[in-house]
Length: 316
Image (tube, rainbow, N blue to C red; front, side, top):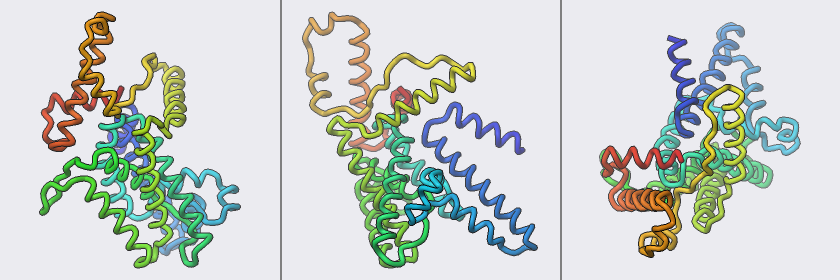
């Protein structure tokens, strides 16, 4: 059984998209940290071992800047660390639901950089609030800030997207995101995790600003995306895998003016420049049509062929 589970994990990292890889990474770390807790519990005579709290704090983001400098790994590890099952469960459900929407609209290759940068933005807000307000907390952990960046990005890129909620029916994405952000704001004054909710809002702010900038043609994740592409290509070469594609990354998000110009272009001289360019234009028109359909009727209204086309386009 263990071998079968490991093969599934390896297959996900080899062939899955960024959302599934992030979900698996968070789940694997959750299992690992809790196995350590169980082992320490047994060693300590069936009592909680104080060393486990030290391990968790060692991997979490501390509010003290000098401790962050002495534990630089915590900048990354804190946004993958969960000790509670429901903390992990809800974060991964949100990541799966909203990450798929973001990946469909702006490309799978932007998910990981957006997750990391959203988590970093949440960490910065946590450290700032913990050092300026009393009783905020000593350290932060969990993927919530990173996930909120993706949730808010989904609401900003496709506010009219419909999601069907149990017992309620179809609800526009913008209202779901608004409620989630508003609940975080309320929780600042009504919970013992005010620092965590400040971090959530920091991630949400980054997700909204990121989409705002992307719509203006500025991609904040571009340097990180290029770095990850280079690392993947280097790994493919070292592991003897398939050679990396020479085709450059293509942005799925389209400027409305540019898209309109493409649809209205009927100049014969342009069409005569080659069949390759014509094929690209046909691909873009098909993509535009599907994205317009999603905005009007939701993702579930797509046919299986349209979903497959959109999935393949997000991989390009």
